[in-house]
Image (cartoon, rainbow, N blue to C red; front, side, top):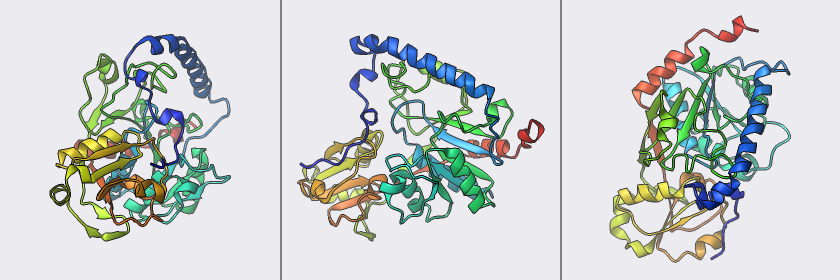
Length: 363
């Protein structure tokens, strides 16, 4: 079978990251060095020697401390829609991971090329019918400037990832400000709880945050107390929608119908997301069983890849679908997924965003 193009090594977590053993212990000294370097950079950042100014509107960062995807993009979509329903005018910024870095910030629409702006921003634009302004650039401060210049009515910005983006100056809600830092956590937890390269963490599990967002139960871990102790957390309910045919979105078919129509050996599920197993598990909960092909996050696809799959029904995620618009294969069905923001989270967000701007007293 012809394989899709792969992304970086770290998008597919090595097994030794999940529990402590000989390899992770051997690499542990390098993890300590990695931690020291980051502590030094954090100290320089806190001194703000460059006299950076915070953004003029609140920033909500949806990020993770674990390398790879943890399901941030569906949360960004859900937050933007929730904020809009509460009367806010959100905008969205992203690095545009997987795309060639543009020289200047670029606005993303549903018909943008994922290879130029990234698959996740195109997914957001597609799912929201271009309702929100979306800008991409590796330097998020430049994206913020471009977004606000182009859409001055925006009064809150959601950043898809960016917890480790030090040039993005913010005053978090936990310090009395309006900026909010969310850490997204999936069922894999923190693995062996070591920093890179001995483990999957970009920052320690004890990292400060305004709240943790989870979409499902977390597997028991020796490190769970360290992660949750004294911290606000919200659980978001996920829901798989009605699949639609890739090359004819008006043609829909329920998951129950798919499960009844095809034998498991005639179904193949494909996912190139941070945690493919989550997609496969969700399908199984709806009675859809079959062969599963998990690929590295942000992998791209070719017609040859799908034609080599011996199945009568191929199920893919919406994130992968934006990279398959030129593929004409009637067997491919796209499975949408949505998240529900709990009322407690919406109310807490409202209370934080309505605070007076603390920066007007400190600049």
